[in-house]
Length: 195
Image 1: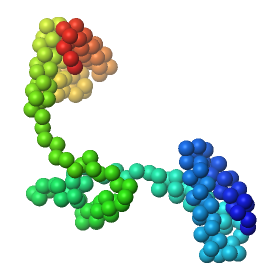
Image 2 (image 1 turned 135 degrees about the horizontal axis):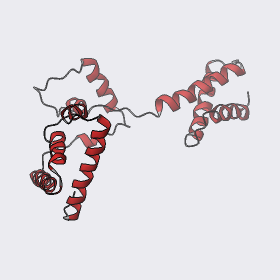
Image 3 (image 1 turned 135 degrees about the vertical axis):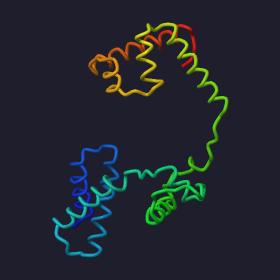
């Protein structure tokens, strides 16, 4: 088998994935896999070489290129930044797996390295904003609209609860709630408060 023929097989296999952003990588992976197979078995038939190329390309595209996501608290615990008394349902196997992933050069876990402390100023501004939203709601809504707004956002009623309380269909409640929220939003914006 000539290098040109192996390259042609690899390109043929890569073309079927319709993935232009990884096409060159797929071709390279296929060529590499073909040479590894021919190194092990110099008499490998064309079908076997094509099968090895196809498998290597599929693996590259569907396994090697996919990111691995881990919960932040698991990353922090593996790095020794978690709380000792924190109860988790992570097994020892999960910790070992996380250690392996984090030891790889591709792992980007640096954003978990800093402890995020609360910002009192930001919390106070959020509380102030919430107060202004409730004030705007009291000013611009009718009694019925305010009752709906309050039940949803202060009492935490679901749409099902609201439809039972206000004796209306869920679609009607949804439309009313959307209109009420728009009314409050416009009132807040008209007063030139930042959201």
